[in-house]
Length: 117
Ligand SMILES: [Zn+2]
Image (cartoon, rainbow, N blue to C red; front, side, top):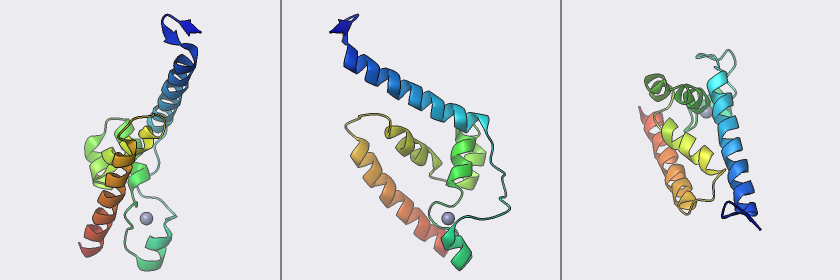
């Protein structure tokens, strides 16, 4: 069965993916976490006093969704990659596995650089 030449299942999948993406971006755009959290939830930071590879990523992704690129880079330089990885979870794209492999390596390298800086 099809509607306007698009199979119903594909159309339903596309609708769900678009809705999920819009909902996530809407949530990220609507809320603003505090720029300096009162309590750090990161166990690595708590134990070592140094930021882990993901510290600041939440604040950065919220800033990025609002178009505040400078603020996002300030919190976490890899936030565009992190947002792309997050959004890719809603889509069946052929390069998703490569994006995630690249992302994991990039975040690991970024974490090492942060520790040494
Ligand atoms: Zn952390």
